[in-house]
Amino acid sequence: MPIPRSLDSTPWQLIVALLAGLMMPLAHAPFAISPLAILSLAALFILWTRVTVRRALLLGYVYGAGMFGAGVSWVFVSIYGHGGVPLLLSVVLTVMFVLFLALFPAVVGAACAALVRGAPPQVFAYILILAPAALWVLGEWVRGWLLTGFPWLVTGYSQIDTPLSGLAPLLGVYGVSLAVGLSAATLSLLSWPHLRRQRPALIMMAIVAATWALGMVAGSYQWGEASGDPVRVSLVQGNISQDVKWLPAIRELTLERYVTMTRQQPDSQLIVWPETAIPAYYHEARPFLDWMHANLVPEGGAILTGLIYKEPGSGAYYNTVLGLGSTEQFYHKHHLVPFTEYLPLKGVLGSLIDVMDVPMSDFSAGAVTQRPLAVAGQHIGVSICFEDAFGEEGIRQLPEATLLVNVSNDAWFDRSAAPQQHLQMARMRALETARPLLRATNTGMTAIIDARGRLQQVAPQFAEAVLSGEIQPRQGATPYVIMGNYPAVTGAGLMLALVVVLRRRGRTQSPADSPSC
Image (cartoon, one colour):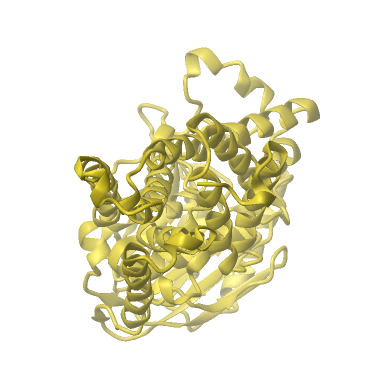
């Protein structure tokens, strides 16, 4: 089957793959041009389904280099700007990171081309749609857990403000990705004029249309129910520069700022300070915490604050959220960030920590079985920074949790796209679980998010700010809370199995019975 003339040369294939990859981050925050996600994948799928396996591997790699090079190269800001790594080494590390991530779409492309090439004509349209969509989602899912996972720029996040977002409480972000993949693959049929009006193509178009309709219907459904009365909350954004945050001389000024801003919210029942808002060990801050409990904690309410907890015996230390209320309760961060909170392969890479000037970069991981914090009359599911990128981990505290809190310090990334991408992912967590989510950050993006993933308030970046408002705690469980990623991943796996079955059955038909391709 001939490739369109505009794509029939190797340079054009590479250029189209690169441009399509550069297009994908524009579908995500802060640009949020959601249709570009479908167009980007459609262009990629057209290429993959018309070339050899080796060529698809290369095109997928070029696409991934464009996508991740434009979308997550902000890691350079944290490595060079705040990690103390020399410029040349920072560039090398950033390029290596991008090129590693590009391997995922490369492998997906090769697998897609292998399934499409030689597919029987009578099932070709089915395979053109099912194979690339299923493989794309499975590739994203693997990227979300392999080597601790990096689920940034998962396609489903780009649809947080479209009808497809209604699928999130049912299937999670990977279910939304699957719908985007099917939509893109169906759109790619336009490049095969003789397939557009064939029955397989019409069936798949009807399925995609039904998927969008299901998203619209599910998006209007009210999952769960209210749990008790609304709660008055305040989120404090101290705007402490990352360059001075850990200096002992700045500690008193930092605490005074948080105290002053908190005292301006006398009616709040729940007050949330950001990740490591108290830049000290728990035992060092003990006198200040006692003072807070006596003078600052609302009566019958609570303050949540980030700090570092060091175990007296072992010396292990944790990135922690402390709940100050009628009692003290702790949440220790479980999913740590490689190279900034712990060093993988320490025996091999130990010298790297001497190059990177990252304070407290050898944390211990908290237990996976931690339960919500019972403070201010609520059960609060807590996550710290990067943890809210993993929906399957957040639901471990549900349905017990009545609201979600994420504390973060995105000052590491300055004015890059990272803080807004991070906020977009937090919105998806609220939508998946049908819980309001409070996000308190050091320099932005601090936000109050309702149980439908909608932004109620957002603080400006790099400014001292307090967000105050009422949120309605909720109870109950969405299908995603109950089943996690299993339905979406299993669905993609079954689609691949169907592709294999269709290929085999198609080959057993007599050539005389097979339609001409």
